[in-house]
Image (cartoon, rainbow, N blue to C red; front, side, top):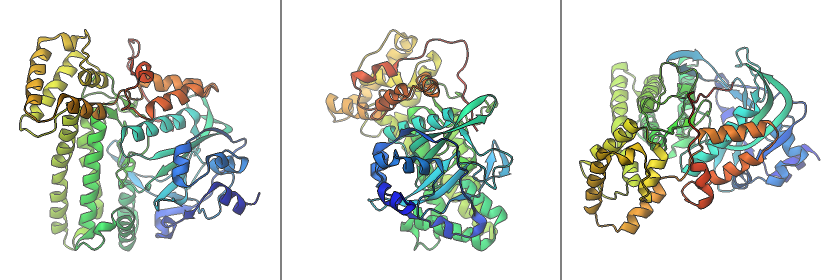
Length: 490
């Protein structure tokens, strides 16, 4: 089959608008072919939404494309340049192990990036091998698809392919390539790179492109670059609130890991919280707790300030005026975030209307949960179905007092008990990707058994179903004397 025939057979429909930007922002380069590509998993639902044939992707030609051994017709592989504050330290970066094949034009008219992660060395690899292991790539697949099920904006995972080659880290791993789908891969760090190392007109070209791609409604604004900053702030305020509401901890909120589109991107040492604690950290490299659960909103606005700094030359000709505009825009984040969080928490507690004391009521529950080491997800499920257990939280007199205040609060709204229950069921997931369940699935997959992962993904596809088959996935791990740790997997 020819390359063109394979394209038609699979359904690729590429455009390459990013490749038409100034060359300072990327480097055209090709994937490094792999020895023996083998498909581990393919996301059939996502493939259909993209206009691709899932069965065709499983063909020899399809797998060769997912592995980087065959370039689809119309694709123009490139590595994107960007920079980033990594744990507060500014570095020149770029796609060191990922390549953008191009932008798939979907049947619904969307434009989405198709990226191969783990596709080999690029000019930005900085001494790395450009490869990835099976475990980390399947981890991203599981978590990103779980986030999709939870209704949280996220990059998606189309497929994972084994390369048939080893990857050397602390140990020897099986190599793998993830096909990632994103609204785009433009990051805060992309603008930092342009502001630091590109010409002024190249920064402007990037900003104009971003407006046209993600925020076309502001293209005619008097100051579209200020509007761009404001729109990104709005999306990030909404996104981080959604993270907090389900107990998700990203783990490495560097500026190169914040997408302008408002999607969650780069699932490295991420994890979901069991027992509620603002100080929860999972990442093995976050020894100071910079990216702890409770710090995520503050880090988000810090990252957005770095975006604002990069945009200063575009905001106003006079630096002082540009600074004032940026500071005013950034000042909106805290209120925006808090309103999103408060609205989400009202849903989790079955509250339809607004009262001034709601914030105190909600934070009071969280304080009790932290004091008694209560599980975050299961506590809200217990409240949803009025099934308190014999845990320290529900047995405490402080909880009894809080429960009375909550019931009084519910009595001051018009909605019925049934309506309250429905709101809570749709706001509180029955399950999250529990860390021990993810590890169980990854261990089995590394040993060639993909059924454990497939069952987990099926359960996570609709976390608000509250079905009996999800019960096992809601169970907590066995007690352990060791704290759970995650790793970047690079």
